[in-house]
Length: 571
Image (cartoon, rainbow, N blue to C red; front, top):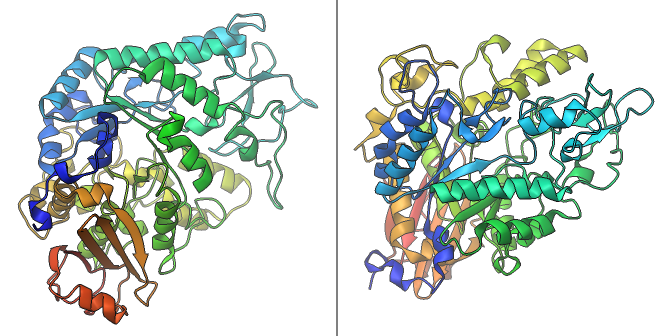
């Protein structure tokens, strides 16, 4: 029996709770997906309008970035009401309609859970800041000034100190992100159970799980000690003290019991910046009953030189080495989330590939090596079209709070504006946030009004409409990859083994499940490369079938590979 004749019934026996091993998740950033009312901002009704695109792609799960009520200091990741929809995006009725439409198409929907912090406009914080005696004072981290300034030397992720003095009581509150995003005090059980009640409310409404924003930051080191100040830096590195805190896993296990037990086929994925392979196994080992999987940041930090806004091109093999390290680390216990991009990362074809001469080839090669690893793949909106970074002209074109804060702080510290803009052009989060490119009409079919952020000018030729039905398109290649995961149990359940192909530019690996074997070989460079493979291995693959490629490939596994050429063999 050939691989193409196999069915999911051939997969190892598993509980319904592990359905996500064969699934593909698609992330929607609602503000930039589809506008339905002409105000230039994407909304829930716009998402409903485009669901057939996702059904055509074949994805199983939609992850919805925040649509809760928010002042939008950080584009919705500053939440002022967890149980209301922001009017920018619609209403609770619109949300119910979206859930129905998603479920009617056989897909699931998970929401973004942002509970390390709230908005400073959330009623909890408004009460907390009202007086030192307020019952909710301890729901956040308040501290007395130290020597007339911040209580410790931590730096915010968004530049500047991680503390802001509140004039109402004269004390400082902690915010690891923007000052408008005060951190919740998870050591207070009232906070935790308020969060759990809110989560159960959404699950009762029909949501199928959560992606948990910076969930490994919810437990802080008692005493909030100073961080080490690196040479030439103004602030200390608080990360070792506010990440992986002493009660983190206790809280996640409590959440599992209080929220998810007995509810069936849900999905929980945690965003965990800075996590190590050993720590990742703790989160996602099913025996520990915490999360199904986590997002790690190893591969998206490889090109950082001195922070994310001073970056470099990766050397051949660096990306493959990172992928392999995580495949090996979570092989026996745990599960990988596979991703190239999201709302916080630049476009992968511009970052890791070649978005000029080899745009299509590099977009499809990167997608192939990602989707055919062991783990659950995530597709960020527009990635399935090969959307690229945007040629913004100057700082006035940007909208992202992280980008704007970095520019302001860098200039205040004496940095050269032109040099600062170069770093921003490579790594700003705004690259991921320009409107999805649906067709060649005005604003790429995203809105009939003026979009909240400029559309990439290449939408005239790079758009979904132009790619539908074109077998050589990026979109149709993604469809084929998703189909392989659904059709061939070896993709979801097989082992992973990296193979040395004699050149660091070549990423080759085998996936094995019982008698079924896949061999993936990709040239992740813009020059020709010839694999140097063991003769016995080459002989074993004589007669192997190429089941997917992004070019006119020679059948031998050791044939020369063109720039960004990828081939998938089955036997």
